Amino acid sequence: MSYTALARRYRSTGFDDIVGQEPIARTLQAAIKADRVAHAYLFTGTRGVGKTTMARVFAKALNEGGEEIEKAIMSGQDTDVIEIDGASNNSVDDARELIANSVYRPMRGPYKIYIIDEVHMLSTAAFNALLKTMEEPPEHVKFILCTTEAHKVPPTIQSRCQRYDFRAIPMTVIADRLGYVVENEKLKAEPELLTMVARLGNGSMRDALSIMDRLMASGEKKLTVDLLESLMGLAPRELVGNLIDAFAEGEPRQALDAAGQLVATGTGPDQLFETLIERLRDLMVLSACGPETSLVELTGETRKEEVERSQRFDAAGIVHMIALCENAQRAAKSSPNPRALLDALIVRLAMTEKLADVTTLVAQLKGQTQGVGAGKG
Image (cartoon, rainbow, N blue to C red; front, side):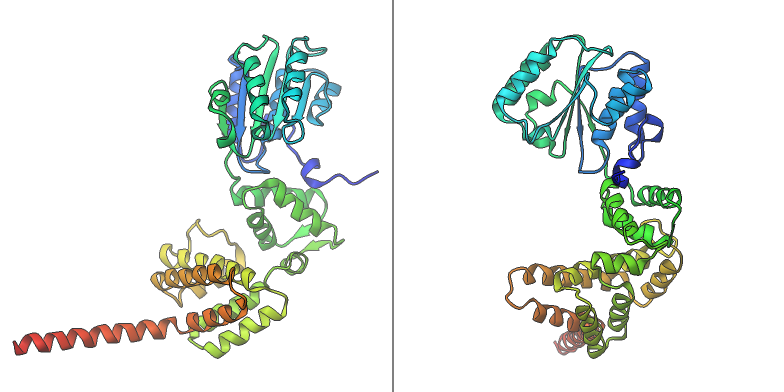
């Protein structure tokens, strides 16, 4: 048998096991129970947050039938639930064909349901043709439009839909789901690995599961942070920690050596800028909000280490360091020598405290001089 990707194997199949979009699931369930189902819906949100899955689950609940029908709906192969890719079926002729077929009653369920994915890709003429049917649809027709770019869907279409905005899935929710998947696959994983994969998913359950798929393909029985770093080409966390420690020590030479070690592992300047900004952000929040804050999504020993590291900085100083990183990152994109800019940034960050002290001293001396002058007057 061919391998089925985790994102497909662990796709939700009912309202009760929807992950990360529970409020929308409850609302749609309630609409069905109250017999208040609209004729058209617009599901919008970034990729991998469950729009198409929710559309299929909703369609399955509307056309409730036997196991065979439900399985066909969830796999996108049912005769009454027609899935259309707006990117490849975006012409006016495609829209007219859809409209022509919509007059025929469903074969097995009460509704003929059209799920149009990436609906924003339809041409203007196709939207105009679709609008005609959406204004006065047959009683047996329902539309579920899905898009990652709602602003590209004409207002005339949006005004005829009930709109639901799918949020990015919280990292903790993704991490919990990944833990369930790992356990179900009879494997083990470091808690910090689950957190890191969830963070790399950037709010997308599908992206996080795709990364987990790559890790499981390694054949390892225990999935570790080291494995993730090697497969994804991430900057080794320990080496980045050494670099930040050098900043705290105020040692430019030590910091340059640490940066050199990171570059030697294959970490490019742009990736290092991004990693530094992310790590410094966590330290800033820990410094400003305290060690128990839920705004930093770290666990176990990693959290303990970062809490201790944050105590070596003050929040205002880290804000300045993040700004320096962002400026250097922006400049490096158009520079013929990004490594020089990286090294300059590293030295600057290692000297931040010293330069701050010099600035304070100059300000104090200036104040004293002004005071003396005022006294003479």
